[in-house]
Length: 218
Image (cartoon, rainbow, N blue to C red; front, side, top):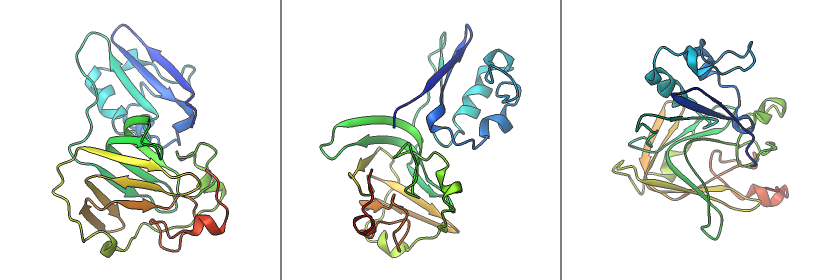
């Protein structure tokens, strides 16, 4: 999960883009095409924005966290959402938004962010992040889930830190208050859950131990 970061700025703002985390969701291109234009080089030109609030709004819509901003003369920074959400993308990644803290098995801090796309097909070359490999892998997984796995521990949706632990050669484990969103489903919970990232679970999006049978490596 090595970053490959490029910076674009002017006297007011600096925009950073992590190429390795970008999966071309195009929220930026559609939301502010005068600033984000892939036909130009450089493809990001902050000076073309009418105001800084437009840049802030569009970058915070980026679902992967590939884009971030910092204002040079204003005390404005991105704050985590009031509540944490995990959204299941059909045939694609888990989009996580909120106060996210990725740790290893020894609880060592790896990354803190507000927006992340986690691979769940098992094929990404930038694990644990999605890199669109699910497309070439023809990954198939609907966005539904079994809500009974979560209902025993309802959440008050107070937000706070959502810890995501990376299990070597296994799932990602979410712990904290969060809302799981799927196809026509929404569950508020604080259930500590293991989410499949090998692509082989028969109980997606949750882990069922299939990573052991296929000798998954991550």
